[in-house]
Length: 457
Image (cartoon, rainbow, N blue to C red):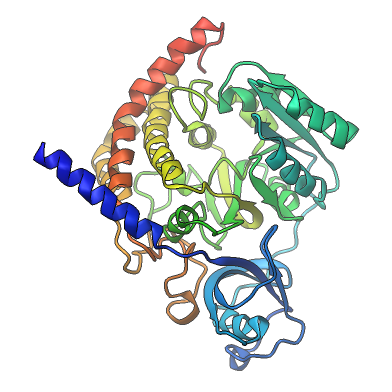
């Protein structure tokens, strides 16, 4: 009784501290190109363009989370404080030039034909925003397929038919589950590469080109992922999540090759969360189909709660295919907004992690020896994932941080584990509970599939 009372009191304190987190503006700042070292830190604004984040208001005084671009290419993030009466462009441009210099990008090959699959359920307003950004892509040859998952109303169908006509294909999947919806989309697409994103994103105009071009350059590539940044930081939940890394994986491109396991990833390939997230991923269509697509007993909308994207990453790597993280492929994500959302998300992430591991071992038992060899390190990794993380600077767990050390980069929300605000114990406990539940949830999801005539992969 006493222990439960203390836990409730602690949660109340954490919620009070959580509610004190203030909003942060989101912006993009585009520098005209590379600068000489002596020019870094100056307030020169010639050729500099400052834009609010997707759907945001013009930038004013106060805290601003900034995506810095050079000649349009994302190179880093920073948190700037714009004083009252100051010019936001001058203040933020001076900070942006403190970011480390970036090597010029290599020319991109012509990307292969692509299909974009967006699974959705009863969120027509958000879907319209996402589709508008997808139709503005500069990719030369692509299609969009909307999968309406277990719809209750005709709202999604009517939106697609009324507003988007022949530009977007509509497919209905009556069985609930994100992986099931993605598999329905996979069966319907025609592109050589199939990309997946969510209905709560806004895609950068070059997203699809940047995400799919690596497939043309590397015949052994099976999967690519990209950068996910916050579209808004208006609520305490959004700021807290992003200050602990959000969904971002940094600004350094990286290729994961199962033939040459990375030395700094001792759990490879089972730490699939390092590779990217389902809101920004693409697969060579033939490869994803060859491995059977996503396990339908994983993902949101099932008892497993999540893990469908992680399952896809590991299945492709297990077939000997490479995975490429491409930070130039950017989407803006609308994070969840409330404390209750964070509780649901923390539990779901924990459950999805162990559910996908269970799915991998059930479907690919040959991977069991490699998995068992990594169990000691995996337990340490799990403890780190669910640890109570304080507000001190991070330990680099989010590899590839784009912000500079100190100065502009200090305490940046979204600075890839900067830990600007303490992570509540309540959320850590929920994530641990989810991890314990995940294997049970996955097995329950498999049984539920049989009642509708489906089988797990």
